[in-house]
Image (cartoon, rainbow, N blue to C red; front, side):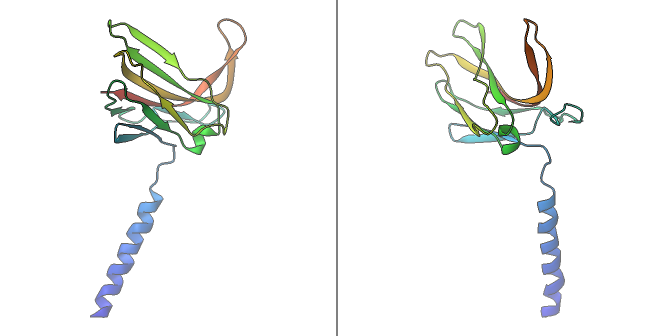
Length: 158
């Protein structure tokens, strides 16, 4: 009877090893609010030089309900935090106007998380994007230089 169990155990162990090998190669960002979270694949992800970019996923944006007046917590992995990054967000004001803003740019290794507090006046958060900068510099529209975006993770708020 024991002989029948050995192949089954070997097959099960092989399945666990293979499942461990199927982890995604691009970093993922986790968004959390009010007891729920969603992990998002990059909508765009390139190497630091901007030369090699992965194809965008079929569904480039995650979705999460973020109740008004509730914070949105964002957690990024080392592949994102090891480069300059920021959070860009869009709100819908109580009068219907669209408002946009952004976090400061975080230096490499400075932060692995960011909490976005929504305004207390009934303004509704609609869209959030984590942007990881690349090493590509381009001339700025108003002088100076601008860094290219080497990766972006997008959340649509329900």
